Amino acid sequence: MKDKKTPVIVITSNKGGVGKTILTLNIAGIYEKLNKKVLILDFDFSGGGIALNLNLNPKKNIYNIYEDLITNKFTDYRNYVTKYSDNIEIVASLKDIRQIHKIEEFSKVVESIINIFKQNYDVVLIDTQHGLNKTNIVSLDSATVILYVITNCLMDLKNTKSFMQVLDDVSYLSKTKIVLNNSVLPELDYFSNYDIKNLIKRNIDYTISSNLHIKNINKYITEGKIFTLNKNLVFKDKKDLTKLTKLAEDLIK
Ligand SMILES: Nc1ncnc2c1ncn2[C@@H]1O[C@H](COP(=O)(O)OP(=O)(O)OP(=O)(O)O)[C@@H](O)[C@H]1O
Ligand SMILES: [Mg+2]
Image (cartoon, rainbow, N blue to C red):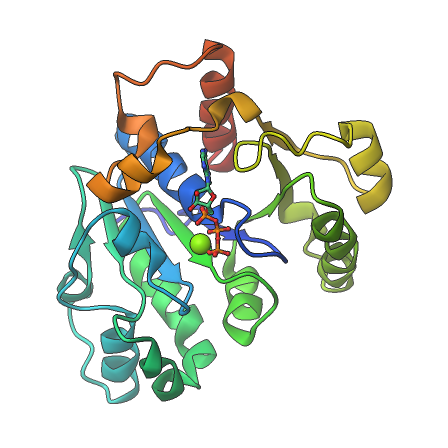
C-alpha cells in the first residue's frame, strides 16, 4: 500500500480550451519517465477527452464507479482502470454523454473515489471541465495542488480574477499554482507577464513556452500519443521542455 500522502493534482480553469487535457497528459508522461505510477481521473463529463486523446477504448468508466459505489457493489479499483503504458492508467469519463443525467449526485462520491485511488498510485491527476461545477468544487477540496491554467486571452484573464477570489474565500490560494499556457495559441502574445500579473493580481507560477506548440498535434491525438514520451520530438530550445519537467517535479515535492 502506498503512502497516503499521494499528491492529488487537480488541473482546472475557468475557460475551456486552454490546454488542460494536453497538459495533464504531458505531465503524466513526465511522471512515467520518472517511474511514478500515475492515475488520471477524467472528471470532465462533457466529452471523455482523456480516453479519446489516448485512443483508448475503456471497458469501464466513471459511470460504473459511481453506480457501483452508490449500490455498494464497488470492489476492486483495478476493475475500473484502463492501462495506457507501464506507469499510466486512467479512469475514463462517460462513454455516452447522456449518462451525465444519471450521475447528478456525483459530487457526493468524489472524495471517496479520490481516497480509494490515491492509496494505489504515486500521483493522481484529475482533469476537469472548465468552471466551478459541484464536482470541481469537491475535487478542489481534496487537491494537494490546484493547477489553474490560463492563456494570454483577455476574457480568460478577467475570469481568472473572480476564480482567484473564490479560491481565496475558501483559503485554497496557497495550494494553487497558476500556469500561463502559451503553447495553445502561440500568437496570443500581446500581454506581457507583467501585464497579466496586474490583471489577475496574482503571480504566474509557471509559463509554458509558445515553443511547445506542436503544429501537428492532431497527429499525436489521432495516434493516441503523449508528446513528452516521444523521444524523436525536438524543440527549438531544450530549456522549454526542461521547464515543463521542473513544473511536474515541483507538483509532487
Ligand atoms: N502544446 C500544444 N500544441 C499545439 N496545440 C495544442 C497544444 N496544447 C493544446 N493544443 C490545442 O488546444 C486544443 C485544446 O487543448 P485541450 O483539449 O488540452 O484543452 P482543454 O482546456 O482541456 O479544453 P476543454 O476545456 O475543452 O476540455 C487541443 O485540441 C489542441 O488543438
Ligand atoms: Mg479538456
